[in-house]
Length: 96
Image (cartoon, rainbow, N blue to C red; front, side, top):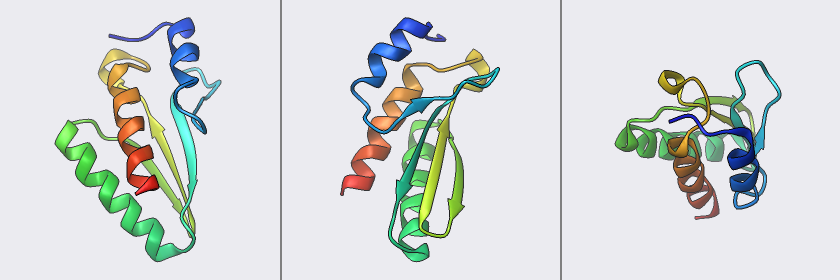
């Protein structure tokens, strides 16, 4: 179920670094500094495994040492609890 704006704003306080884009179809988004290209790709592969396990697949942009993740639940038409769950997992993967 798609979350309303107030709920999204409240939940973002628990996800430092994540923002809600102001696009017509908003997404949760965060850029991660990984240090170099190889670390970026290792991070992306770890995200891919977690996303596949959750059956929830983010958009990922690799720019050498930076990985930008965009999360939205397309079949719900917006940001859902699944997006925040995967954001938390991605934060843990980056911290690890």
